[in-house]
Length: 132
Length: 411
Image 1: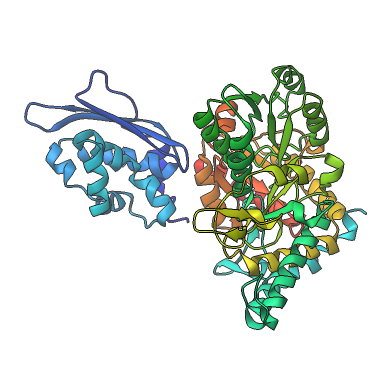
Image 2 (image 1 turned 120 degrees about the vertical axis):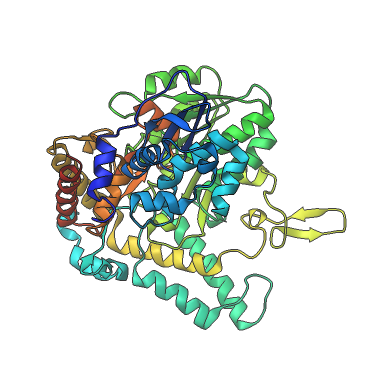
């Protein structure tokens, strides 16, 4: 457990750098994890070169889901939408640097699921996560 | 009886799982009995003995094992009937759980008796199992649903209930004890008020029957639903109790073997009670485990159990309310059973539960299958500690210590 709440996770949970909403935005999507009532929205602004210029997340949830959202935003800044499409659950777990059981895995992956749903459309996002 | 009559050290020895280490060197502190209770050796041994010694399918068989299995299965029904003071064992239908019992009533009594515009009264503190079956029926039959609201003290607002009764409801379905707030509702009063306007009542007894003496005859309940697994029995078996004339008049639920008296190619004649509602091979070993569970609780004494839980709950509320940043929901200890739900400032309930787990403390986090109630409380989720006969004051102290650790970690 003490590994689960590494300093980096607590820090990103308590002092996130990418919390907020972008209005207007080019891409937005929101979804929830009905198991815990977590709710997450992701907004993106994409430049003419197809790279993510600005990104933000909002909503509420546990430390794992909120920290993973903040770390994910930090990671995708400057990347292309195709880069985002290529991201897998391992990428998010690498960002968090922890191992998770099946219940908490859903918390950790909520942000990637929402992000991909925004970039891809909902159906493919789920497929790509299952596949990933 | 008072709490001193409960020999907790001895009771804990009856539950092998309580000796378990959750992590190396960390003993289990199980505070999640509202979700499911742990099982004493007598229940485990009864089921094991059945499979090793008497396993056979029930009814119709004439060989020794089938005779024994049938006798045990029906004796278990009688044991549970006695436990809730039912007049007759045939008023008890074996189901899978409380949820199936409520669905059975909605799908048989409800479909046979409710028509467009009819009113069903529920409450704002229902578990999803006593909401969704009625919502499904309401959508199919165009029924009206109304809800008894919760006061700021976490109690049902009986003044509003009185007004709702003037709308001529056909059914009032309510929880005897909230699985989130712990509120023990005045079931007898609610039932009397419903009967005065000619409405039937269904009591969700999932949390009440395991924790204090419930007498269906005294309550005058029309239906009562509960599960074995929350009362130190096995999963997979529950009870629907019903008033006999209602059960007699209701159409069958599922079709299949055992629920029939005669079958022709194009029709059937339903069996008598209670078998009419028990299609297919039932949970036989579980019924025998259920009997052992009821015998165990009876041996300990329901009044002593209720008193023990009451003292633990009062103690837990007092200790938790001392912790800065912890907010306890629900009524005072005098109006509730062994459930303490709370919020922790700045910390999500899942994180609370996860940190406590590192000390072996098992609590529940989430919406506890009561999303509308959490909406009412204006929180997405809560943390819940719940108590049963095997819990101790030292375990409450461990919870308090663990919560200080949570708060420190997230400070």
